[in-house]
Amino acid sequence: MEQLKQQSSGTDWTVDEECDLCRITYSIYSNFPPMPHAQALNAETGEFFPFDRVRKMKSGYAMAEALGYAWACNCRGRKAAPKFEELEQYFELVDAKTKAPVEGMTYRLSSDGQCLVDHASLAGGRTRAFSLMRHPNLTFVAWREGDVR
Image (cartoon, rainbow, N blue to C red; front, side, top):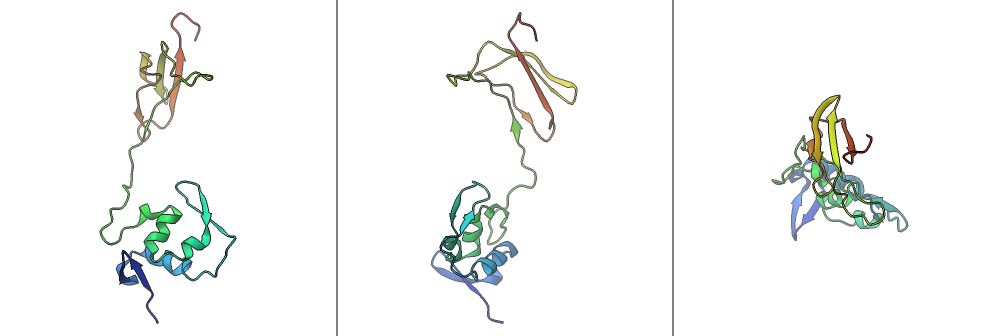
C-alpha cells in the first residue's frame, strides 16, 4: 500500500511519524473531493470557514488545528492538554445599563448546602473564585445591607 506523505514547515515526513489523530485526520480530509460551497466548523471557536481550505492543508496536525481539536494531538513532542483542567468559577454583578461593576453588595456562596462564604463584600463586582471540580453546584445570593434578602 502506498504511504501518504504529509508536509510540515517545508520538510516532508511520513504518516508513521504522526499520532493516530493526525494520521486519521489527514487520511480522511485529504481524500475529499472539491466542495467549493461547503463549510467546516472550528469546534473550539464555533467559526465556520471554507471546507476546501482544510482539504488543501499539508499535514494532519494543520487540519486538526483548523478544525479545533489539535489540543488532542500527542505527536512529535507536542504536549497534550491536561486530563483534568482546574477551572474556577466566580460571579460578577454589573449594572444592566452602564455595564459597570456593582459595588456595596454583600453576598453568600454555598455549594450543596454547605456555606463557603457568608457576609462578604463584592470586590470590583466579583465574588471569590472556587474550583468547579470541588464545588460544581455553587449558589450565589447577594443583597444590600438592611434590605430584605
